[in-house]
Image 1 (cartoon, rainbow, N blue to C red):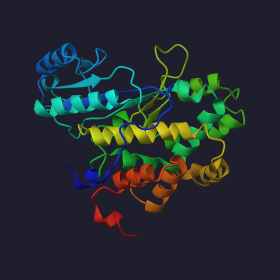
Image 2: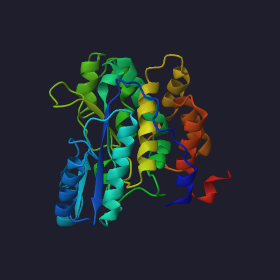
Image 3: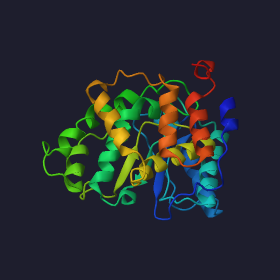
Image 4: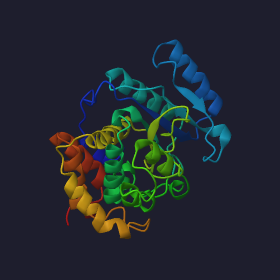
Length: 299
């Protein structure tokens, strides 16, 4: 375990609203698919995990007989949820499962939390555009670099989302949630995806695709804490959205995928302090952002 993970301190629950729901996708390699399937059945029989955890093949991973993806049921902010996530991680590691440089750790967050309010979605697009390098560095989890499959399956979203200013002034059609969903759901394989927002999709979530895969329950919980509260912050009218708007307009013409993902500790701290109201949450974010690299401890 990376030493920085020992410094992350999370409560048993994350103080999320009752109506907030989410789901996760745990990718792995080197554990035999059929054996994992049998163990999941046993865990369900013994009530160690709920019935909604499912195993399925993951095409982006190389060896189909020794890789896969475990998807969660709809999850809530309860102790039982985090116990089940820990059980899934422990079992995969016990079965020689590994989080390789091909594995991702996607999080789906129920879109109901933003109430189909177009203003909230525009805020989310702007804050993501402004802080994408810092968000992605945090989402690397235990690692300093992006996984090999990220450019193909979770490319930078900022070059796409920088067009939100055209949407605001009507150049992309009516300013409404329905039109936001139509305009910004056409690209799925980005760091943040609105692919599942349109009404014709089977479920409605905001998908966070940038996190590296992990079999560490602390990283999972810290990721869930940050991304859910990032989205929740978009509902808070007391936050300084004028500042985010100014920052967005300063960088929107220079937010290509070549931006550094590890360039600015002060900007990362600004993001954490904007998103979180709790000092421990801010500290946990910064610990995972800096990781163990000494070059991030001194400017």
